[in-house]
Image (cartoon, rainbow, N blue to C red):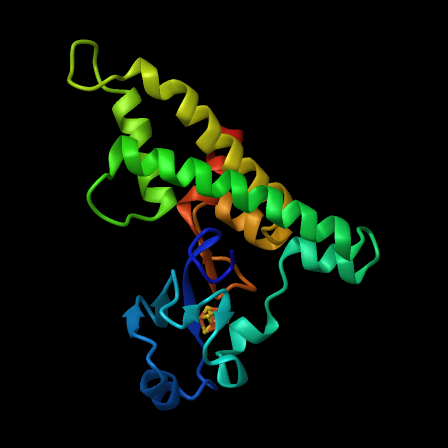
Length: 188
Ligand code: SF4
């Protein structure tokens, strides 16, 4: 979920990364403010693996999600962690498919963006086009997905900064709006 855009929308390339090599390997790197970033889903994430694993950027090497840290600290067993990942992936796929059907039937769109569109649709004034009320249950599921991602996978530092819509410090990773919005909701 770190590489496929579920948790994050982009990754910073650090000054000590080999920019030319990463570009040659296929990453599309672009300026974002004072940083260089590449967007997620990552083009090098294929078949559930990193195609450039041995030379992946420094941020990819160093990042460990909250669940991995809990496994490292023996707070949760590897089997239980795997089961949780599978459970969340199944739920994510179902919510993503429903969001596609509701707000983005014609093009691949990040979950966070679809969630934003759905929220707009639900907030549309009475009498506007679209089955607004029918989407309330889906909105609830999309919010639940965001909570699960935030609770189990986002690093605490990322979650804190995600709530204020600022880039995550360790990050050099930016929380995707599918997870970020939850924090905003929680504090609103
Ligand atoms: S470079 Fe590899 S580890 Fe980094 S985001 Fe892409 S697929 Fe994931």
